[in-house]
Length: 225
Length: 225
Image (cartoon, rainbow over all chains, first blue to last red; front, side, top):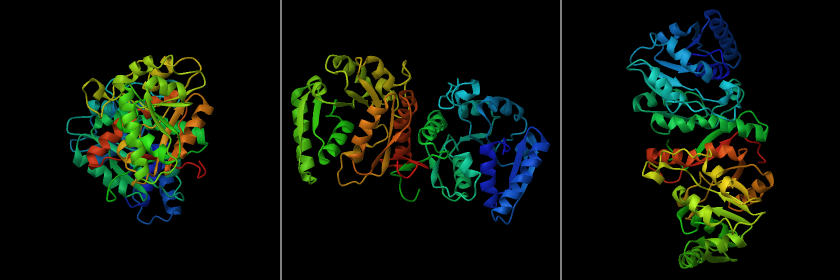
């Protein structure tokens, strides 16, 4: 979990820890990563998790040891992080990009986005990732606030895009480990151009309805999906 | 209903007719409009509607007489239609734009979109609409196939954007006339830049899951909305 000290990364890590998924929290500073790992263990323990496997590491150590690496950092830091990770990400790793190119990155509104030359933050990640690393885009519509509060039940979808079906399947399995979340395959990675925008849309909806946790559920899908 | 002979326009008109909302079907040709109005009466009658008020007219006559004008035409024809309507739309009219700028308009894929100079098709409509006409954007995520089949129950949201709250409220009321549809205010008209993309996203999801009717429901909103 790169950016595991941030709100989204911490929330996801918490839910996975509670589901028994081993987590490596990464941060630029090992100390902050360890501190977050400690908090995570504590929160998951309070929430009744039993087999807790959490470790705090520097980003590159965390990335080197993980089979699935989730990048949950602000857009402003995405390319710096990817640049730093280029020797740590090994072929066969699945890189899950959760970046939303909000205009907040350049001092603009969080209800607006900026254009990314490659088409989307996910496609920027694909361009920067080492050969053999599959990029999957996900988690743009899930509220960090809700994830971080285990007393809250979730009931929404995680929209997944990517060019590699096997890698998407691996991410879908991780999504299913969190009760109440359903993975939905939205197509190739280029569709992240649309999905990434939804973070801004939900922020606008949250403002309008004075809530903090709107999400998305697709209707009309086959019941078994 | 401008473009009432097309799939989305006809589907919406059918559902409203069944709910007792008087409908003026507009088309470039009065003959085609009348023919569609006839079909609409028949379909609504079969589905058990009792007070059916439907008329087929040329686009500009339909627009002149309506308080709310829904523009449901392919992106390719949007600006031509708006140009033709510029003397028919009177101040105080609410213009509901349902256009999605799919790349299909220029021979590309329906899972991709083209950039609109004004930011979105809705903002193009705002620029072209006569002074005093409020533009509201809606109905991009509702399946025309489902709308046109009264035996199918709907259970999804209509994402609405616009700068004028009163106009959005007027459209929200129309949405609520269709059972199973919930209006959600997604913010100012500029947010249509995101909502319009969702048509392409849902087309991608439909392909992936081999369905024809995926839609969107937002989660986490206050129960009374």
